Image 1 (cartoon, rainbow, N blue to C red):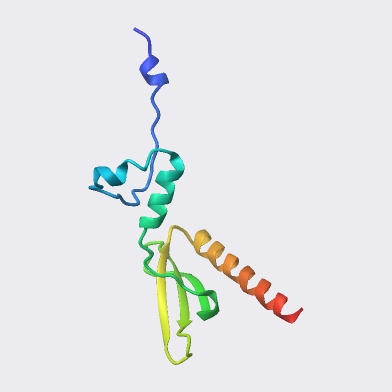
Image 2: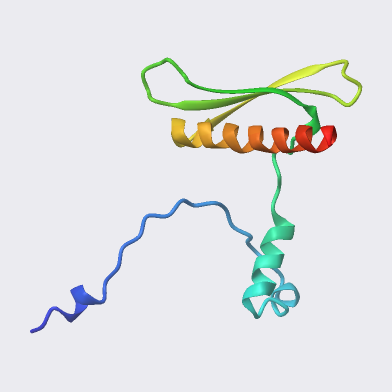
Length: 118
């Protein structure tokens, strides 16, 4: 007996993101192609928090200090009238991920500030 089954087996680790369940048959009929599925999922997503870049005052990434190796990203934001502040804390997969997010945001801020001076 050959090991063909072993040759055709693949294992992947994936993270569960969510599901759209119990669609009516009438809703599912229009979801035939890949773009139909992608667009439907995109529209159905719930955004937990969306931060306007111009309302972000400060950002910092740090280790939680509890020895668990959790890396956190904190944002200080204001409201449009600059009357109230909020602090948002997000857990990242790694310190590198938190630092990469800070770097991307810093680059975006620098680009905006540079273009305003021009």
